[in-house]
Length: 61
Image (cartoon, rainbow, N blue to C red; front, side, top):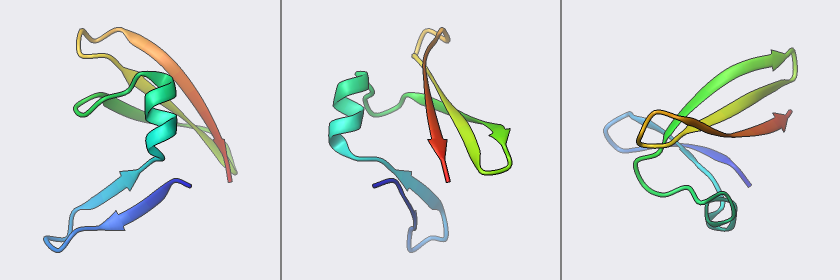
């Protein structure tokens, strides 16, 4: 389950399951961008540290 959490300092953090990160090869520090796909969904693009787009994940809400 993907969760949006609020830290004590007010910062919002999006958490994803550890298994999903491992499956996609994502690690701490990977850059994630969000793009609206339609009214009820969006696309997450993970950009590797060398700034190459390497993965798209679709979430429907």
